Length: 106
Image (cartoon, rainbow, N blue to C red; front, side, top):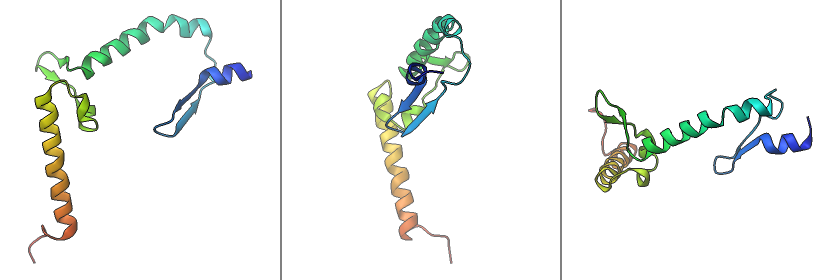
């Protein structure tokens, strides 16, 4: 293993403070190159889901669990507003519990 392989295979996500070194995994460059079309298709499908594509055609459902962490990614303003309102209500409820405003009966 050389320095170049380490540098090219080290993955870092600075926002999360995570680094993953897969340079010692015995993946041949040709094998990884052969996966590029599948990677491209997977990333395109994920982008479509993030943009609001129907993930479950039988039930006409979108998949938006990541919108809850980042409402600005929601595909419509109405959905974004609904998420923001719900999050505000949850935060208000949690604060009231912590402050003792909401408590079990004594």
